[in-house]
Length: 150
Image (tube, rainbow, N blue to C red; front, side, top):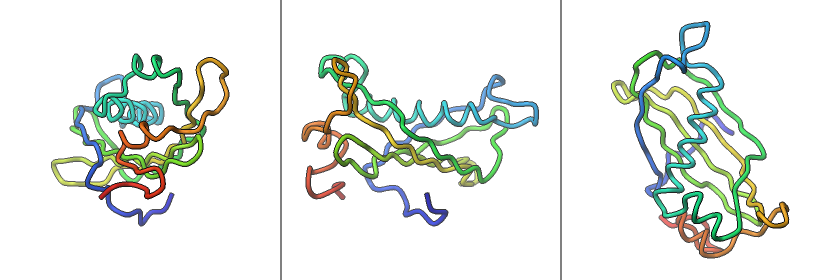
């Protein structure tokens, strides 16, 4: 992950939420576990927005699992602050997907954190990695050989 990442593409997904009391750690700001959860929630909400909820994935016989999370914390998030998560699929290759997520505070547009997650598509019957099919790529704005659509 590079501190000078390109801005999100036009097809990025965004949603807003508030920092809750259970997100606050002993230092008085959102803790590490909350940030990881927010990355996962952003991915799930994006997936739902393109019609790929858990039930649909179960019908397809596949599931995404995390191989690696990397989070860069840039500023703290405090109790009751509104946060905007913006996420997008940056790459889809073979059985893996790289997803990027940024978190901003809307009131001042402050970048709070950025994350990069590597996901692996797994067959639910074999529990082994499975090549990402064309229809899944297209749901996330990718043409199988061309990359993301503008």
